[in-house]
Length: 440
Ligand code: EPZ
Image 1 (cartoon, rainbow, N blue to C red):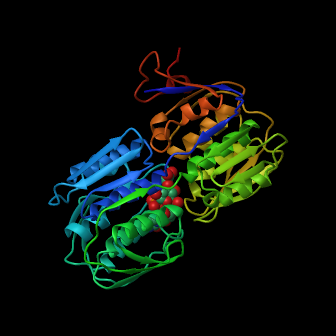
Image 2: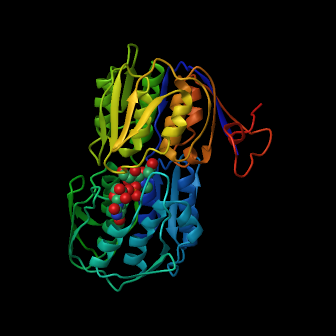
Image 3: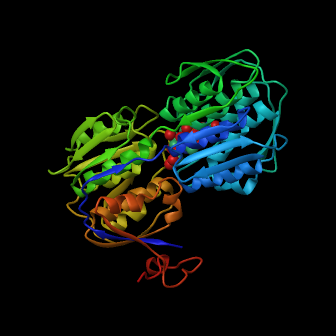
């Protein structure tokens, strides 16, 4: 169990490149089950969620090979498989995205219901509703979805839920509908760039889809899909996290290979709190010298502020000159990281619908543990701006979605390193000092 040792406050300079988008790569790799030949994906991030999905796809009869330059080559070698290894599905929710492609291509699927996680309730009722509407016979038994289908049939489906559209639900139903007989309309579809990227990949395979990027997708089912080579879009959540790093440390650097269009809502907030931004094609230069201004934020589906950036923005606003309020319409209870953030001296209070943040001039180094991916990134950013040393545990959460984030921050000048603890932590730590073993 590694910990990160961060010496603060950091001074960050230079430039850093963004990797490929985890949430696009995952749904596109799952969609590769639909293909009738070899697939080549470029800019696939080297993160543990991608590794988990690669293992799952191998279990499902695919050859998955990664080469050093972030290229992944895939091909189905045994199309008879339809049981998704439950330990892998439970490890990572996005594995549930194999359900639609398996049903459409192999007519059968057995996939465990994904577990919950620290960011809130994660039902899959909309996924199942959409697939059943396309004609799949779906039963839930012993925590598993058991699904069967002849050729799926096109129809009209509304995928809008109580918290707006569903991203992976749209991915599952879209993948199932491209091989269905006839036309499908998906109303209330997610408009996230990761869904547009999935749609572009499916079109490259030979699918017929209109309306990508809007909340209504029109799909004309085809009899067969082919092969494709596809470059994954840049990771807008990673880019946002890096830009916020400059804002929390009061520095100036360039994030390259990013897509500024996908980041507009975040760039608007960074300007509103007082950062200077210069956007040239795929390079975003950020400069934060003066004091930070408070702002109120509501996380919403795209093109609003992504729920996956909300925790990092809360860290930023703990350093603002005044009071800010933050709520999240996508995952209303996504504030489990707040108790850890308070260990840095942050003044964050839970309110009925989110948190209120009283800005302070400086955070102080501490020992903290990441409990989920983006909450972990928020704590790392706090460590970068804090005085003295921070020890951050729970790195496996951060490694799920960031490709070598600590190395990238070191490249910008952060004094940050991974350490193996001197002694194994207790299974159920009683106090803060036992939560993180003393690192040398
Ligand atoms: C995707 O999760 C992302 N994960 C999440 O990123 C991201 O936070 C989320 O979209 C929202 O943008 C991947 O793409 C792998 P949803 P997903 O279905 O698809 C409710 C990260 O940090 N809902 O769009 O699972 C649900 O409870 C991860 O990279 C239903 O009610 O999220 C939530 O409130 C974390 N019924 C809302 O919809 C359903 O069947 C949006 O969830 C499905 C969802």
